[in-house]
Amino acid sequence: MDQDDAMLHEARKALMQARRIVVFTGAGMSAESGVPTFRDALTGLWARFSAEALATPEAFARDPALVWGWYEWRRARVRAAQPNAGHRAIAAFAAHRAADDGGCVTVVTQNVDDLHERAGTPAAVHLHGSLFAPRCSACAAPGAFAEADPLEPEDGRHLEPPHCAHCGGTIRPGVVWFGEGLPEAAWAAASAALGDCDLVLCVGTSALVYPAAALPERAVRAGALLVQVNPGRTAFDALARFNLRGSAATVLPALLCG
Ligand code: BV8
Image 1: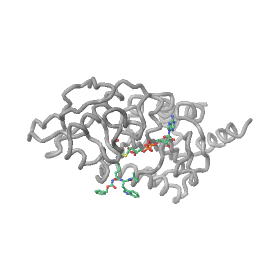
Image 2 (image 1 turned 60 degrees about the vertical axis):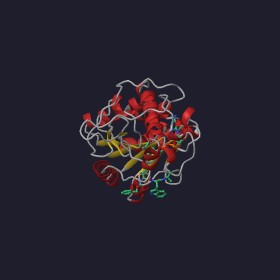
Image 3 (image 1 turned 90 degrees about the vertical axis):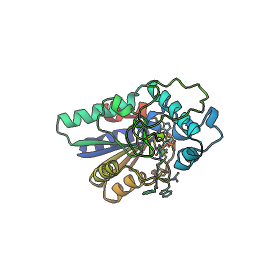
């Protein structure tokens, strides 16, 4: 058994012994579904911008059509994508645990796609919102998309956002932009789950964005064990008991369903 297999085997034992597990995911979780990671989503029209520059209330105020076009391009990519074997392994593992009362599994994600839900994880906690929950930037009323199925050109386009049926305000994406606070309910649910877990499984995150990245840190300080799945190095490497260097769709089925 080579070293990687030995580590996978030990990580699996730790998962089997854990009772309260949180799966904490980032953009890498959806990469093998064809959804570009946050920084990779800067192609075509947006290639000259930084993600942090586009995903801000200031950018939307300055050029709503540029930002709305970016989010409709990303929504089109997600609608064309399918959950991968990693998403499905998490959903199956959680269902299995719930069925044989082997403890609870909570999924907390930084992703704004709906691939956890489409894989069968109904109650994923979205810390940074969703691409599928537009709202009015003036009265916060839920908004509607002009097209249910956006057909966005490969290189993107400027696209005027729709207007609110109630107050005529500009509809904005239902995501959390840099400089904005996280949704209170999601933050409370994630803090409670990570504050009380005995194992956190971090998948496909660079662990650079706060306050989200502080949650697994806090869990480890409270005694939880951190298992990481990522082909690259991240800010969580030093915190992790097991660093499984591989992709979500290849490692998670072996780790959770092997
Ligand atoms: C706030 C939604 C105040 C929008 C997102 C403390 C220290 C430093 C900075 C700050 C701090 N506190 C606050 C800040 C500022 C800022 C911040 O963190 N900046 C960073 C960049 C330094 N935080 C904020 O602004 C937050 N708000 O603080 O508000 C406030 C408080 C109260 C009241 C009012 C105001 C808001 C942050 C949320 C921003 N929104 N998303 C959108 O999606 O458009 S963040 C967005 O970027 C994602 O949601 C995600 O969180 C992040 C991207 O990170 P990852 O998901 O990790 O993805 P990344 O591309 O970086 O890495 C991919 C990883 O996957 C890599 O490791 C790679 O190796 C791996 N990988 C690749 N392929 C695979 C894989 N892994 C597995 N399998 C594969 N196949």
